[in-house]
Amino acid sequence: MDKEITKYKMICTLTFGDIYLQIIIWLIVIFISLATTLALWSSTRQIYALATVGIVLVLSLPFLLFAFVTTLLNNIEFAPIEEEAVNRTSSRNRVKTSQKPAQVTS
Image 1: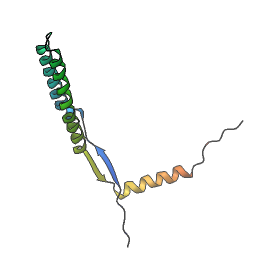
Image 2: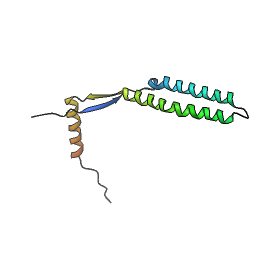
Image 3: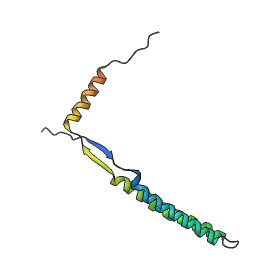
Image 4: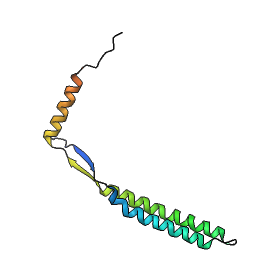
C-alpha cells in the first residue's frame, strides 16, 4: 500500500481588472445616494436624507463584499506540484538544514 500524498500549490490569478467594474458600479451607487441626499436636504427632510444614505450603504456593502469574495474564490487555483519539483525543494531543505548557523565570537 504505497499511497503517495499529492502536494498542491495555491495560485491566485486575481488582477485589478477583475474587480475594477465592481468598484466602478459601487462608486456610482454611492454618488447616486449622495445626489439623492442633496435633493432631499431641506429644513424639514434632513433626517430622511441621512436615512437614505445610511440605507444605501447598509444594503450595498454586503453585496459588494459578496462580489469581492466570490471573485477572489473564483480566481484561486490549486495545481499539483510535479514530483521533480518536490524532490528539488526537499533536497534544498536538506542542504539548508545540514548547514551550521554562524556563531558570534567575542
